[in-house]
Length: 132
Image 1: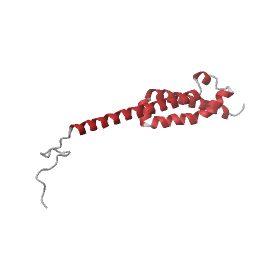
Image 2: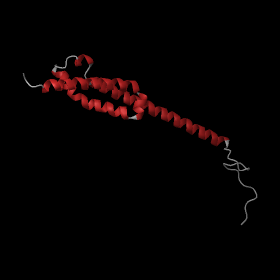
Image 3: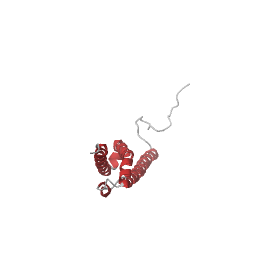
């Protein structure tokens, strides 16, 4: 068996260098662009879902006006529910992408959770005080 005299041109040119044909170059560029667009769409959807989750948590938490009246039964019940919601805020803060995309909102919400925890700790001290 002998080798053919002339080698067919494929991906490599006749000299053996790694030059791509123009059609392959266009295909690679189109693939990279499609991947970038899909990545952008995915990040946008994730940003939106985290934003809506933050908004839902914020609407469920006790407001500053309610914190001024901790003796109100509705406020006390909301303060008791706050640890589960603030735990979700903590989880979002631990997530790199969520923290990268929504840093300011998460930081503000975490400060609010800390304020609620301070008020809750004060209420516990008042409840545990022995009767005079």
